[in-house]
Length: 143
Image 1 (tube, one colour):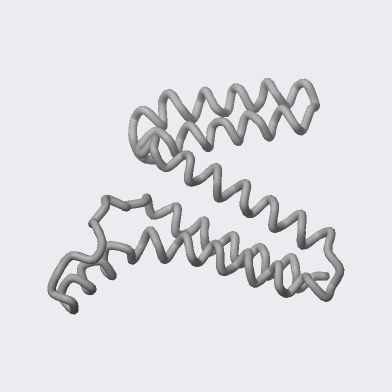
Image 2 (cartoon, one colour):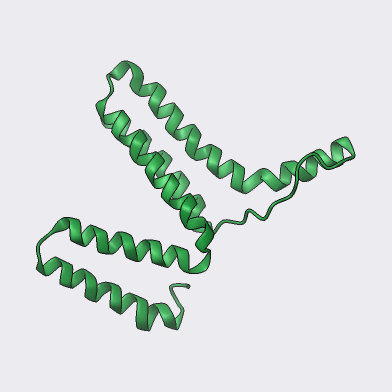
């Protein structure tokens, strides 16, 4: 589903707005967040349902790193930040460049070292990775 598709404009967007406004009437921020989270996951899964697990893993991983950054002493904060940023960049590098390195190793060594896999992620995945890295850096800099 694209933002310019008729399905999004005439069905998904109005339904999401209606559910959000209904949740807002109850004055429960957790319910509003749940509606927005559910709508985001449905929107992302509409195109590539398999990658929803990757997205959920990524969100959980960043949540854990964020909680650790908040709770740890300043001495370990740099290490936790480095692990969080490297984890995000590692996910990005794997999904962006795995097939490139597999083909390059085949050309270099003359035989197939790795099996090629279809790892095409939507463009939003790459933006999410960079945003998470920037968020971690900003959070740590403020402390």
